[in-house]
Amino acid sequence: MKASVTVKKNHEFRRIYRRGASAVAPCLVMYCRRNPTGASRLGITVSTKVGKAVVRNLVRRRLREIYRLTPPKSGYDVILVARKRAAFVSYHKLAGAYRELLEKLALLREESL
Image (cartoon, rainbow, N blue to C red; front, side):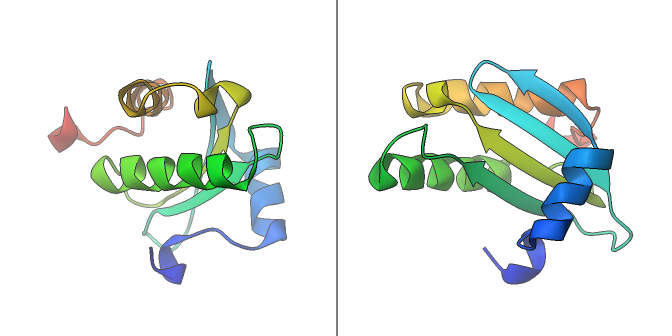
């Protein structure tokens, strides 16, 4: 994933946490906030509570792939926070939870319905 489409800086994460909208699923939490650039960006947070490095990287790779296949509306910064259950659910359940959160926050694109 290109650096231009990711949220990397701590102050950006804090701003989205503080001022953005959020939605919760059993294995995932999504925060979103409109950005002025017009392009969507992704930030992923996977705590050490989820598991060791191999497990955290697996969850991170799955979330990046899910985002790539089903991107949100243009012009939004999205942060995905993996919960402990994310390590134990299948890819399809994680993708379903992501899609559900996009619907809750009204970020689902019309062509992906």
